[in-house]
Length: 314
Image 1 (tube, rainbow, N blue to C red):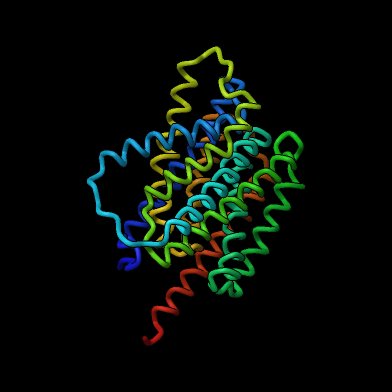
Image 2: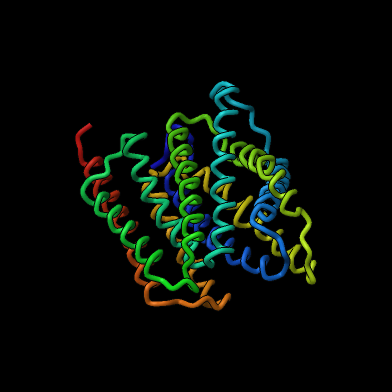
């Protein structure tokens, strides 16, 4: 099965999203190591992530065979897409890095990727006409319960409300970016590489003044280690992962995208405990299970809805 608007098979889109989820799960751990290695802040890290990621994307695009541009959306509409995506990306990743610095990798990632699908499901119902249903409503309630347990049930040493709030802001940026990508994917005519490169350029320009104020060049006793970490963040969970994400999200339903992205909090949680030594309390586990269970409920609701639609006579 393929999406006629974009030409990308849905199966390949799903594979792209799986790779994206696993790659994104490593970004927070790398950010934690950056914070431990230097005094770089969230704005500086986000700026370098996008600026270097943009350079890598442009270099990769130069190696692609030249394709004659098709008559797609007008220039003003394409520019609007890039601007909106870049702003959403700036909010998403900067607030996420700040949340990681504030409340730790595991909690920040779980809240961001747990609240994100809920916001996406509600937005898809309001903006894209995708039905929420009883299963979706239950999933929303479960996600809110999990968020409450994480926020109010944990100790101040493991869960900080300010970090949770930053993670919710990140989830809002992620949700807006996903919904817009899916909306534009319905009409086709969007090149994933061009969209990603343009979004990175907008994000880098938006973040530059804040990064300059924060300190663009950090102090570190291990410059080589810091350079490798920043280059990894720019290359794998940024240039590669976002190009795959925008391509896959344009042909896969929004709720399904949210479910696949569960790979990110799972990967991040494992790295947080095994690599970074973050504590894993009972309330953190309970809140995490509620959030991930809620998103799994969205997956079941999505699968049933898709099966019902496929069985209807055309």
